[in-house]
Length: 91
Image (tube, rainbow, N blue to C red; front, side, top):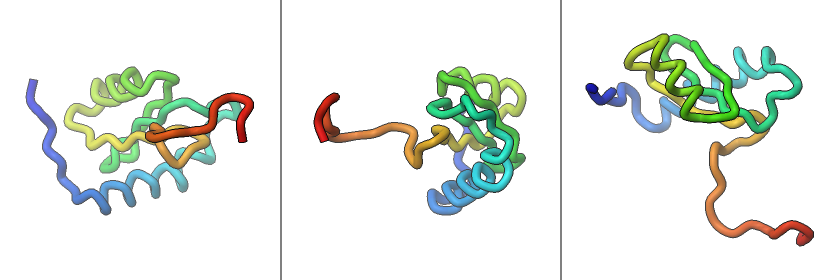
């Protein structure tokens, strides 16, 4: 298995991914998509949506080998949260 090499700097990669998500994908998402992952190829604009980020990425790579994948979680600015967060019932 060959490793896909990045073709964009971090900033351009993020701008492309977020731009495609905001302008092309978000308006098409179903109301029940909150919390699901969107895997986006920043070059073609192709994407996959799934509750499992790995499944979405794998399906996209099967369609577009060597895709430059940007992950986004529907309804959130971040894919994952790090650090402390309030426990249930707090804050």
